[in-house]
Length: 597
Image 1 (cartoon, rainbow, N blue to C red):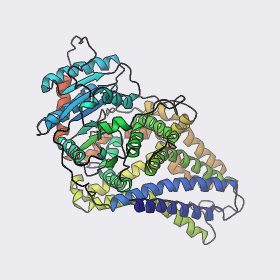
Image 2 (image 1 turned 180 degrees about the horizontal axis):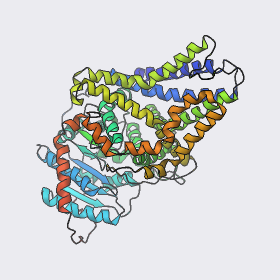
Image 3 (image 1 turned 180 degrees about the vertical axis):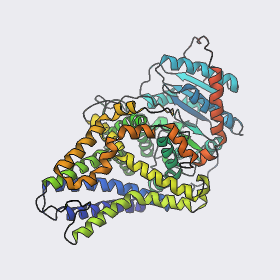
Image 4 (image 1 turned 90 degrees about the vertical axis):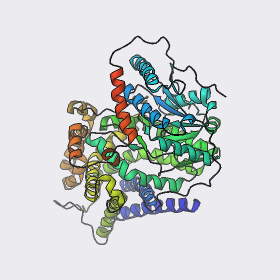
């Protein structure tokens, strides 16, 4: 494992240094300026991040489907697991429908007696809390689940989701060996849950086992592209992560099972001194908890072969950016935790990678700005001739420029291309409708994400800027419904992008007209951002893509029983809650909770 990691890091550094050297040779052919050093430094960081993702994908491509299992140990048939569903101002019937589907499917297994379900509400809206209580009563009656399904509402949601889980661990965790942590949009197959418990039983050193959740239930073009990309590419990337992280694996905050006593002993989170965004409660608690478990000597592992783990995702770019803003703040907070004593080296590297996931966008943006300024401020001669898309350098600088451009395209495109072709010409193609639909879907997804990349870059850059000037994102709830995104709403969220794109086009035309063709792939999506956001957030267009067979996933073509059951339960619960009834006196539904140990 140590050798594998060293090779991985050195390869990423070598690729980044090679790209920076080629760029240095090309841009300094007519002399060196201070601006060149800024460009080279920014490009080095960008290419290091690209190389990191490229190597992770290659590690996944060349890793077997199933990593070697740990040494088998006697199972613990008496172990007990709490299935936790934290909620925060969510669609109540959708959340409880997912709980009902999992509960019902698990009840048909021989291991049902080992599980209890908890709905842990942090909702702050009175109407949500009242509806949660009513639907809980209906669901307990429908499932005959008294004593197996519990509901608890916190009046004060201190610590947000991490505090919600900590409250459960403190008050009720002693009654359980494991807790399966879900999100409000999570859904898992019963045999997957049982398998995860079995793997925990086999290995007492394993404290956290993360599954690979795949996206379901999306209709908009944006949501369907995310859904298709997750189904086709994510399992391969996760294999790469698993191959590199070993005992210091990831925790993505949900669809993961945790050993309760290890968590209670190791994962108490500090309140960071100072005010948000860098102080206060830790928002992205999952990465930190994984690092703390690894520090305590436990195994943290992701098993990409665990199928039947699902989640939903925002259906439009605005909701995605809103959620991303919260994650960005949480990840940048991790910079304060890097010096924490005792953390494993790879845990620190994982925290840095999480930070770079958001810093990469503003770094790319700064590189693009500096690169546009360079021809304007560069000393003579100017190697951008009129009406030419490509600069003309003296030999051999032209060859180096082409090699650099080719190398960046390889880093960006080769992993997905290899995965797409590897899936299109193997048995995996049947899951996605055949060779043609796999390749067509991968091609359209590439085009769509390329067009949207400048928009996403601007949203992430804005998020980083806001955090650096001290703006706190809070913890907004996520709207996961597939409603239409009007152009007017999209414009209100992206008018500043339209302005930025127009300024870039005008400035390039006025001061560096030879570069106008290079700016179009960035400036045009920004100017058209409201239209692009609206079109990709329109479920009607998503339905048209579905009729063409594009972005179809295995879970959409052949829905699993738990997915169908969740949809059925949503209709049943919606029908049960049409007629309002008097509220129950107590805000709690915690009668009969297991006594803490």
